[in-house]
Image 1 (tube, one colour):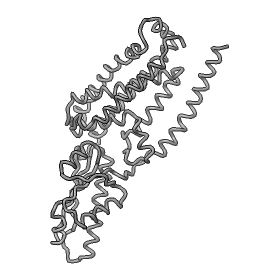
Image 2 (cartoon, rainbow, N blue to C red):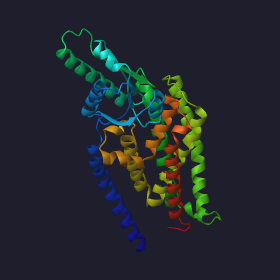
Image 3 (cartoon, one colour):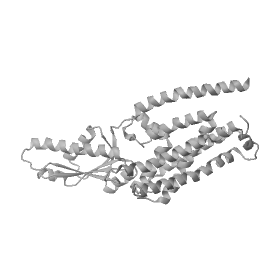
Image 4 (cartoon, rainbow, N blue to C red):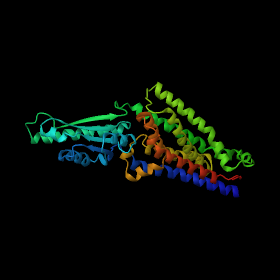
Length: 362
C-alpha cells in the first residue's frame, strides 16, 4: 500500500511537469525573445564638447537603440569598457568637430561597435549610419550651399569586423554542448542508480555524502575537457575561428563552468523521483540556457525582468568568458565577475545536492 501511494505521488508529479513546463516556457519565451535590439550600452568620448556634438548624441539617445550610460575621458577608457562588456558601442568626437562643421567640411564621428555579437553589431551599425544620414540631410536643407555631408559617420567594428557568423556562433555552441552533456548526463545519474538498486551498494560504503557527490562529478570533468578540446579543434581547423586570447586561461576558467553545470545536474538528480522527471527538469533548464543566455538572441533586446532573470543561468556568464577570450583576446582581469558567479553557482548546487542526498534507501 505504501509503495502504491509513493508511485501515485510520483506519477502526479510527472504529469504536473508534463503540463506545466510547456506552459511556463511558452509564456516566458514568447515574452522574452525579441530580435529588435534596443538600449545598447554605449560609451561616449566627446573631445569637442560642443552644441553640435550634443545634438548628435541626443539623436542617438532619441532613437531608443543606444543607452548612453558611460562617459569616457580617453580612448583607452572606451577600449576598456568595450573589452569588459560594460559597453557595446563607443561614440567618439574629435576636438575640432565643431570647427570642421563651421568650415563646411565633413566632421568625422567614429562609432566603435563590439562585433563579437553579430545581431547587436548589425543593428548598431545600421542605426548609426541612418542617424548620420538623417542629420546630414537636415543640415544640407538648412545650408544649401554646403557641398559635403556635414556628418561623416565612420563605423569601426571590433573583434569580428567581417561579421562572420561562425566566429560568433562556434564558441557559443561549445558552451551549449558542454551544458547539454554535463546537465543531462548527471541529472539521471543518481535516479538511474536508485531505480536499478545499485544505490544500495553506495549506501553501505563508509563514504560520506560529499565524497559520493565528488565521485560523480570528477569523471565528467574529464569528459567536459575532451569535448571542449574537440570542439575547439573543429572550430579552428574547419571554421577557421581565431583564438585571440590565452588557451590556458580558457581551460582554467572553463573548469568553473563545468563544475556549475555538473552541480546543477546533480541537484536535478537528487530532486527528481525517476528518470522521466529528471529528463523533464533537465530539458526545462536547457531551453532557458539556449534562449535567454545570449546564445541565439541578444540579452539587450529582452525586457528588463527577463534580462535580470538571465543572470541565474550559468551559460550567460560562460558565453562572456569564451567569446571574450576567443574573439576579444581579453584576460582574467576582465572576467572576474563572471568567474565569481560561476564559482557561487558551483558551491550552491553542489551543497544542495550533498544535503539532499541521504545515505539511506529512499
